[in-house]
Image (cartoon, rainbow, N blue to C red; front, side):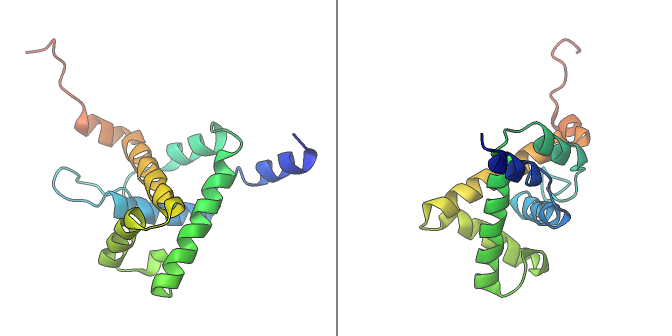
Length: 140
């Protein structure tokens, strides 16, 4: 790998605060609080998840995530004229649902990847895992 590419990958392995903020807002729209989900995807502890994705993923993951967030920021600004974090809850939900139905493959793939990340982050929280844990089959 070239020194220039290695340097670029190192710089993009850090998840900026604004990227964390956008991801948390997206996770909240992807997993809203409601029946069966007392906490939204935005309301769980994301610290361990963000640490894991920035330190244990392949070198190409973080640059790919950064590009996906640029895509989302651009699309939301074109459609709504303001950042995702400033949309209403209904607008956020409609936007995320619209990504999954978009005619462009790359946009649909971004939606799928964001949904996977939201689920991974959600179930990384020990309180969520405890809530959904099955009772032991051995105890009756």
